[in-house]
Length: 137
Image (tube, rainbow, N blue to C red; front, side, top):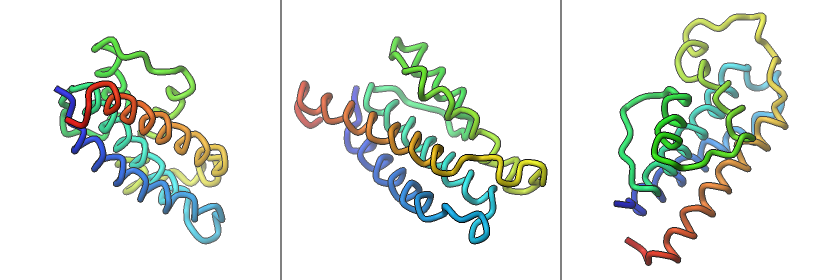
């Protein structure tokens, strides 16, 4: 069963990470690992909102690939453009504690912020459609 309340809560949390992310465009102010962490967190919370929207529970994990796989196994089509977000996986844990300096400034911050924003808006739209079609649950 769709859990609209939980999905909305996760989207609100994702938007907070996205807002922080959008204010981190200058690498001299925020390191790559901090920027990447907020991008990963916004993505993770958004995919969890999507899972709740389609009525799926999810494990306690930061693994974006595993979370997206849950959607696909359920028959939910994940647009190809969002699969690139799985590249943020290492920012959840690995780069928070042991960051490879070779990755400094490897992310195109403007593009990552655009992709995450697009994903949040896509899932918010999906949730709104679910609410319209089934009423607020």
